[in-house]
Figure: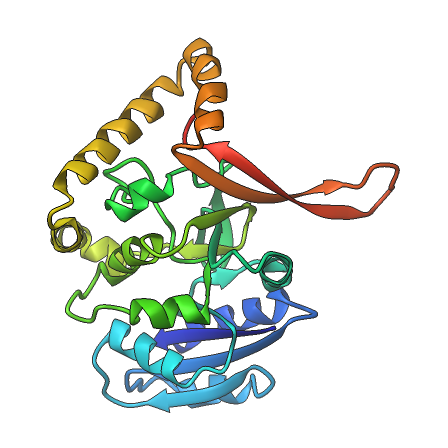
Length: 299
């Protein structure tokens, strides 16, 4: 199974090198192809590209339609069965591709998945989330997967099958900062998101991050995307918001959490599915992949 990685970049040669080095370490037994979409850098990016002939199968440099347009163009030339993109400077963790491919190959019904959140600086991980992403698919469809809602989906470490990307039509380039948020909403309307109980990639924090500098604009675009998808389903959106906020609140009360967990698990709403690895019975060093059904926020 081939994994295609698109990297948009502009005047960030050193950051690109760090990302490419992390890709080398992220999958020792997996076929990976990298497509670098450069917006016309003038900082010696060609020399960095030359260092990774074993990884990079496509390199385009020149004026483009911005970050999201570059990503769309990159995937048009991709050959993989599994897609992901990562910005220059962000990093994958060792073994990430191996684990992702293991899940996709073992479970044909899984169309997209994400790992736990992580923030890095200068290539060094700083903050690891000890929790799986528990926002339910119903909440994602309704736009409640943002920092100000009931959960957050980190773009770094998000993987999906090629057919899901093609079915969704790629990124909406009319949005300049929140096209990933919009994409998650559209993906969730077609297939449930699955979680992996490990960190797959890290967002590299620095003062020049577009998401940091444009935080207020990101939130404005997020509301635009929600209104576009809301349409006549306003009652569903509002119900999902109330249920999500309620469950997130009561999950902090141990007794109530225990009382709600089992009946909600039987009903299967709002359900999330996670993957992890456990040691095989009677084995000293062998692990097996485990798939579990859980209830959003409650357990």
